[in-house]
Image (cartoon, rainbow, N blue to C red; front, side):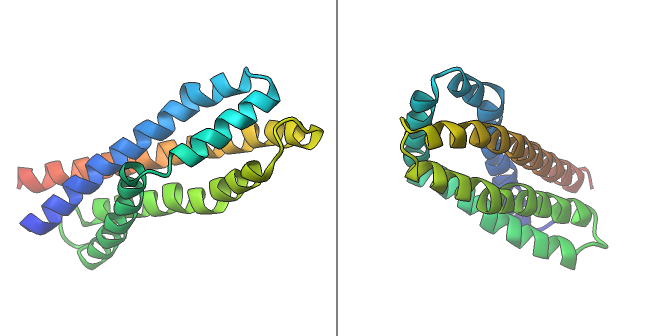
Length: 163
């Protein structure tokens, strides 16, 4: 593994770990806490969270790791015959498919629908019940995918240093 690939892999491993931690927090206690609130308050709180998350720090890590994962996927494909190549490929694909794609296909549309909801309406309460169940279940997928990606990349780093 070249110094550049090593640095890229390390940055990706750290980034996927950070993203996994954020999603883990939502899966284990944030969504549970929001579900205990009356629907109007839960909706309003999640609407606020969905606006507040759009910071350069979080989006920089989330999208930065998407880009490094794409690069590692390509490098893993090109170096499948090399030690760690399959782990780079697996780590990249896990993040791209299990974290980025799930976010784009499942979470963003639900967050957009929730943003348009009137928290105090009957439709808002119905949307909230469905939102909680689907959003949280798929967030577990994102959490596991990001953590598994991080694990693959850490093992690839360890293997590269053992040689």
